[in-house]
Length: 341
Ligand SMILES: Nc1ncnc2c1ncn2[C@@H]1O[C@H](COP(=O)(O)OP(=O)(O)OP(=O)(O)O)[C@@H](O)[C@H]1O
Ligand SMILES: [Mg+2]
Image (cartoon, rainbow, N blue to C red):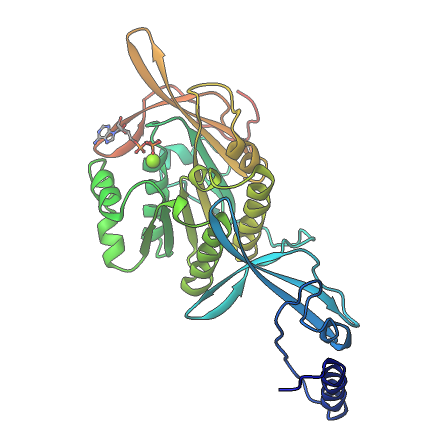
């Protein structure tokens, strides 16, 4: 209750000075003023560090954001960063690291399909690398992802599986029909499936939830199926920034990652925002197709790229059986040390 504003300002200043004299680390909250960050426009000047919190709605999705306005004697991130409040308090999305200094493993892991491994000169993909699987609807992206997840579980490596299109039950049932037993892995605690509708939360909220689970559950492998449904809820530049942050965290922690992405057209033409954003960030890119051939449809898989190793370059035909993805017995040479075929 001080009515006189001049007196109040003087008192606020006196309080701040007193705290500083006492050498106390003080956190002071203040309400936003009309034309200034704080009600009296003074607090922000006499503080050493000012953190601005904001809660606003963009495209019908509410996001909390945080910005460090100033911090005397220290450099700091200057952008607005989204944050999340939950039972563990506040968590902020990590800032993209400016340096590229994560460790690169020379260890190789299986794609989950032994025959497919042989199409890479190292007989698999690098541990801790990021793989993108693209294809139009029904081209077996999920089956490939499930193979990958199951093989990680069999190596006793924990898998976090984000399913944005199928519920846990549906995923387990569907994969069981192609001989991939996810149920056992869920029961043994090696596999954790998180199924949700991506549109329920903003892009950043998703990233935060994802990162928190990665941090708390510490999986060796992360699958996002499909990453394209996350992408429908943000602008292209935001999506790319988010993916970079996500891949940064995965790389720093040496996590094997597999993302699937739905492409709109079958066959050629990767004119798709997600694919464009992820394909350059991914280490390995596998394109799946289901092309018409006379009266038949032929499923095929093409390894588009795999950083740091050679690979078979042409489409490889496969079928889906009760044992999952099976490559037809064609005369593919054992492919060692090749670059092109
Ligand atoms: N038990 C089975 N035997 C043979 N083929 C199967 C079997 N189960 C699924 N398929 C085939 O696999 C396809 C689905 O594979 P999958 O779910 O991996 O595709 P997807 O690329 O993830 O599709 P979406 O884009 O819809 O998510 C089915 O459309 C079907 O053609
Ligand atoms: Mg799928």
